[in-house]
Length: 182
Ligand SMILES: [Zn+2]
Image (cartoon, rainbow, N blue to C red; front, side, top):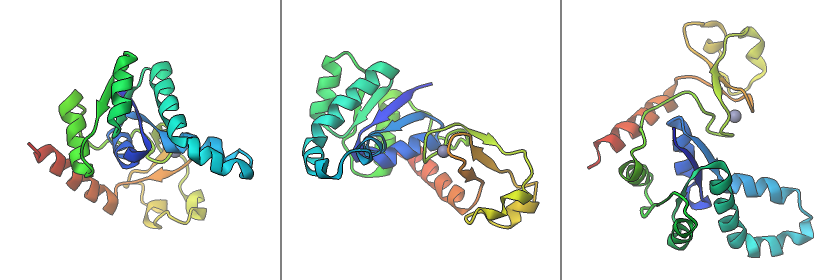
């Protein structure tokens, strides 16, 4: 199965790749983690250098992790190819088209999976423990606490819960839309 690293202009596409079950690192999450640890007075300098940092880090991650680089930046795409990395250049600004471009380029499967956390890229597993104890989670609908027929999933890394709700129907529409594109 493909693994990806996407640049900061393609965060949304990165989250969709996770919804489709692909292991995807999103560059701004990585850099913001790193930068938040730095001295405040250093911020301006860091922001100024961020473009250079982004490109270097993207290439480093793609290389080290065997990931396909997905980018909106043609110069970075060319540089990656020269470095013998697998890279896909995305031309569109529209999310449906971006997913479609990637599908055309390397044949990703555009289907909803409940296997990867959209927030942290961790593995998502079916939640089988006691549900009554979950009432402290403010975003959890009450019906899910007692109704075991409704499946519940949890991220093994960050603890985010997932279930099939309204957002799932919206995602299904997106999948249909992309798969209808020609
Ligand atoms: Zn997570």
